Length: 285
Image 1: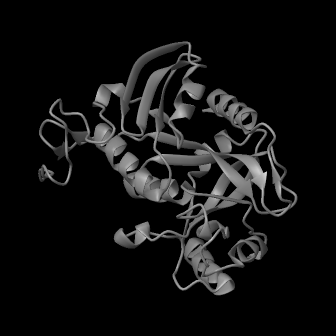
Image 2: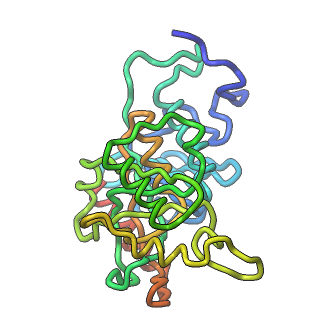
């Protein structure tokens, strides 16, 4: 096997991965990934034991035990670019010998579950609900830099979505890991998620700057392909599913609905909605 170069995989002086600051034995096989660094403590307070804590930049890691199962919770920050860093470095911890810089002969599969907030784009999905994503459509350009295999269904949905919305670029559609999604689906709504590369114009918000697609939110909400529709939107899920496929890890995305853009409603206590989702995921992970 060829050696991965020092500049392709950057390590710190203690041989920890560059951004996360972790070494392999600090990472559990099951990872809950959260965007907000403050949410790490919100998860780990349910652990019976916290064996390890680390912080570097926005990447905070707590590893411990919940119901005798070892779990890591890691904050990624917001957006596909941060998720790319997160995935490459947890995969390196699992599947690369950091001393020799060679790929390990036996692949280690991680279960990676995004636990985040989201907005509903259908009137029948209430604020306070929890949505587990089946498919996710990425409106970012990150996968243009990778060779992402898509199923015929995913490729068809990508083309139909481009045509329906009139956007000038081709989105990508990827599916979550079916077994992991089903494992987490108790008392959740199964839906399909749009991943936006920004919080304002990509989600149809206009503040002081003209936006190119003022009807994008309505166009995404009205999209139909047989029984397929989009339930919610956020900023990372499609990236999780894409890198999970590329790297051979099981991925899922659990979403706390804190807003309904169609009904113009926002949760009175979003912290409680997220906390209920955290407990639900921990019990089923």
